[in-house]
Length: 66
Ligand SMILES: NC(=O)c1ccc[n+]([C@@H]2O[C@H](COP(=O)([O-])OP(=O)(O)OC[C@H]3O[C@@H](n4cnc5c(N)ncnc54)[C@H](OP(=O)(O)O)[C@@H]3O)[C@@H](O)[C@H]2O)c1
Image (tube, rainbow, N blue to C red):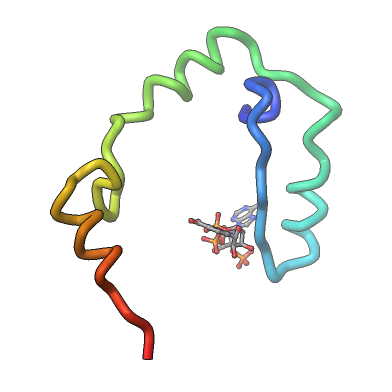
């Protein structure tokens, strides 16, 4: 869980029950094995675009909102 890795979470939900779930994260901890299994899901690739790709960064920087 991010909090166990000292990573701040910014959850967003429009549903009250989910907001309550998202706040109720301090009463348990994941095991090292569970943390490792979650870490293994990270492919290191964005689902949307690569922030390290110079062409993409250039495109984002040249974008103008009207
Ligand atoms: N992602 C970014 O790059 C970025 C950058 C700057 C600021 N922010 C801000 O950070 C906040 C979160 O952004 P985000 O992009 O991570 O969120 P998001 O994609 O806008 O929304 C989170 C999604 O997760 C669902 N969800 C929330 N709690 C859940 C739960 N307990 N179980 C199942 N589904 C759940 C929400 O659905 P429901 O609403 O239907 O519950 C929503 O579809 C927002 O206020 C956003 O403006 C994000």
